[in-house]
Length: 478
Picture 1 (cartoon, rainbow, N blue to C red):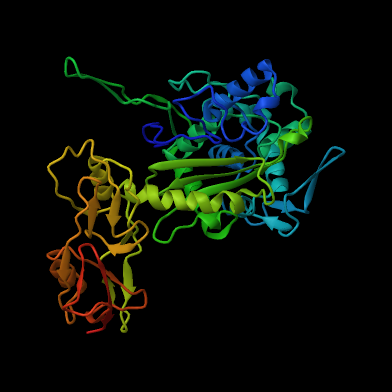
Picture 2 (cartoon, rainbow, N blue to C red; picture 1 turned 135 degrees about the vertical axis):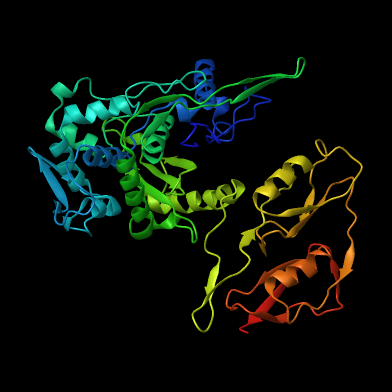
């Protein structure tokens, strides 16, 4: 989601199915399909068609600690870095019930920041007790967690909470404080965390922002809907900083991306007591950048086999998604500086990773490459709205400097052109890129190079290569 507008930029569930043949079983059903009765087949198809993001609830687990922490800061119950604010003995006794922490490796006193970094259950049980059920419920309502979001899609489910804060038992308050024994939909949680990141403003999820009537050439804009201010801007800033520290120094390290400020919270929720067959849910919710957030991303894996911690199972894939999403949105890494021998900071041309634009129309490919600060080399008389990219050069995953040239090929136009590599030694990065681009060639530099002039190039001058080839250079300090 885009927290500032509520725009749902991407939504996916798996196992998926073929929309062209919706009555055919997907890969998860096909092995047992012939053994099912007609009623069972109908139920199985209904479940296959279910959009879990909006129609299925789950126990959110530790990402819900973000809500508890936010309430505590907004209500001035604590601050981020109070020394010895909480104590973890590896468990917390709630009446006669022993509630264990997820790990026994971080016992001892903690501040709120450390409790989030370690995802400490006893610390949040203690915090939830300080806050109280009535205050928590007031904010659950304000964050939209006690009602449907109103997203413009069918079959939205609502959450499942204890009926009244007045009758909540101590053990229920305890588990609720760290996201267990309550149920929300993924869209509810993503909306609530988006509000935390959006200076405290909750937005209604938006699927369509404009309707174009091609018969009349008229447009209807669907404006973003601001629901309410839930928390102060100050609390939002504090929470974004706390989420960043989870990624830098806590359980969320696996989604850290050099050059970007990522915030996050990992989660592992146990199966319901009466449905152990459901298994664990591993999850990771991330925001980026933390300064002015443009993305809130939630990933949840139901019943993962083997490892079931959110940081381990989801974090690496959240990182991979953000590595593609952030440049696509025009948010390039700030990590483009290197130090010279005399410690003077010199900014070099920033690097980008070439995205995969195969099987997209040329028009769409152009748009994606522009988002990555890359240029297009393509020439044909066909309709770019219908021509589909069959190949690209350089390949996806290649590292090049910004403003490099990507050659596109289609089945109608797959003619490769060879060019002569020029000599770029003695030039600066900027001068070399300008010279190479005139030949439709690209540039990158070795990671251990320092700023200065080019001392070596990996492909000798005079060599014939395909347009789009990357020339790797080394630099020496002037």
